View (tube, helix red, strand yellow):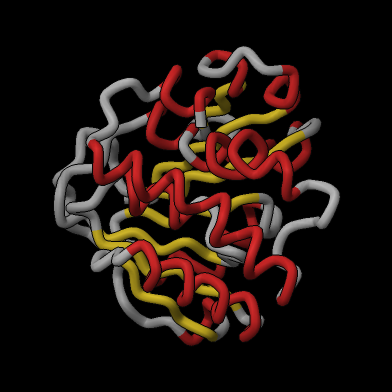
Length: 207
């Protein structure tokens, strides 16, 4: 938590309370339904919560923006972003039912009224969104293909509608088809911890 408040000093008391609850909630649910590696649960705030909030360092979403988190797993990056942007509407989608159960229970415990959990495949989701977010779910060309029809035309954020992905490693081949328009941001621009040395944020405008 201390790392979180260092990078996000303006959190409200409600947000601080919600972020504090995450440790206990994920500890409880992860012991029952494995959504985070058992070895990694002690790094929840650094490897999962702060990592998710890199998107909030990169851009600010206007209230009523609609965002879909594809392959949300245990709720990352969707749940930390929903806490940080209470006026933004989030759909957290995953094809694995037990993961969505965890997301649903965590969301309910935090009283997140801006989150909808969906158990299903992204190809079956027909609604429109201003942004699609994901964390290492699939290669960018594949993600673009399956979410192209979900991209809303209306624009009201400073950043044009598009995909925002959190990834790691060498992305040269994956980004090559989009090299003229894609933006690749090393996360060590935002966070000094060694974990972020190889992590990147990828933005692909699709509006």
